[in-house]
Every structure is written in C-alpha cells, then in structure tokens.
Image (cartoon, rainbow, N blue to C red; front, side, top):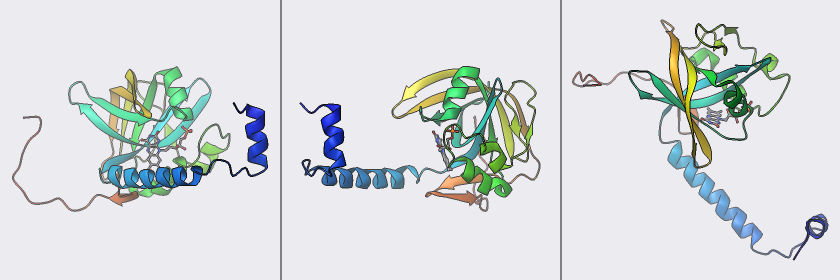
Length: 201
Ligand SMILES: Cc1cc2nc3c(=O)[nH]c(=O)nc-3n(C[C@H](O)[C@H](O)[C@H](O)COP(=O)(O)O)c2cc1C
C-alpha cells in the first residue's frame, strides 16, 4: 500500500503509474460541462446573500427561490466550503438581496472571492443598510431585500439547503432584478400576452 510520503514522492517525480487518471479527468470535465448546461437551463433570480455574525460580515452571490407564501419562506443552497455558509450556521440569520442591474458587476465579483479575504468588502464597494428585524444588514440599492431567520438546514447532495423565514423585507420601486440563465446574468424581458391567472388560487 502506498503511504502518503510515497504518493507525494511519486507525484513530485511526475509518476506515470496511473494511466487511467487523464481519462478520468476528461470524463469528470465532460460530466461537469453537461451538468452546467442542464442546471443553467433553469432560470433563477440572482441575489447577494449578506450575513453578519459578531464582528464578521460577508457577502456571496447566490441564486434563490421562494417556497412558502404565508408565512414567507425562501430557500438558498450553499456549498459547505463557503465562508457565508459557516457564518450563517453560526449567526442563524441572513439577508437575500435581489441583484439590481446596476449591481451586476459587483455581484459577480462577490461570487468569485471565496473564503476569508479581509479586503473583500472594500473590493466590492457595496453599501449596506441596517435590517429592521435581524442583525445581518441589507445591501442598499437591491431590487428587493428579504430579512431571513434560519428555519431549517438540510444536507442536499453537494450543497446544504437553508430555509429562511422572512421577518422583514423591502421592494425598491423601479428596481431592475437580474436573472441567471445559461451561465450569464440577464435583465428581465418583456411580459408575454396571456390570460390573467392568479396564484395561489
Ligand atoms: C451568479 C452566481 C451565483 C452563485 N450561486 C451560488 C449558490 O447558489 N450557492 C453557492 O454555494 N455558491 C454560489 N455561487 C458561488 C459563491 O458566490 C462563491 O463561491 C463565493 O465566492 C463564496 O464566498 P464566501 O466563501 O465568502 O462565502 C454563485 C456565484 C455566482 C457568480
């Protein structure tokens, strides 16, 4: 059996022992590309999750959805490696801020800076404003903000599902929400003609 040190030594010498490794890498890349095509075909609202726990504040780009009408409950799915995941687990509250078109570049930057980076908030140059019902702030200028208390956390495949009970909110008049689709951020298009249908019925 190879010990850790023999594996490290083989890797350092560029060991060609495992001839199946390149084929496995190709297969993994192809599967990831296929899953990327599949999941980016499901349009989702693009949001900024903001969490403050003690002295720590962090922001990440996320996609979100609502799951209950009354009470209002929203869902986000966070990768366990994320710093925001860790902070939300500790503090048990967060805000979901629907990205406005004017904030898209900052939102994408927030989605590319992972882990503890003391300069992250400065780089993002977002403005925050206090929430009414929880300690995590809202992102100013968002198309809509939802103040959430963690109701449930469930392990779901490679992400954890966080259900947030919405205890405060604001919707900005004239806001222009961004939608994520096909691996890109989109402005919302023209409303289609059709019969008026109310939901819930
Ligand atoms: C448009 C967009 C949407 C994203 N949605 C999610 C998501 O729903 N869940 C997730 O875990 N990561 C998502 N990410 C990735 C995180 O935003 C990214 O890993 C972030 O840097 C994590 O920061 P943190 O380590 O400070 O929490 C998304 C990234 C982008 C650009």
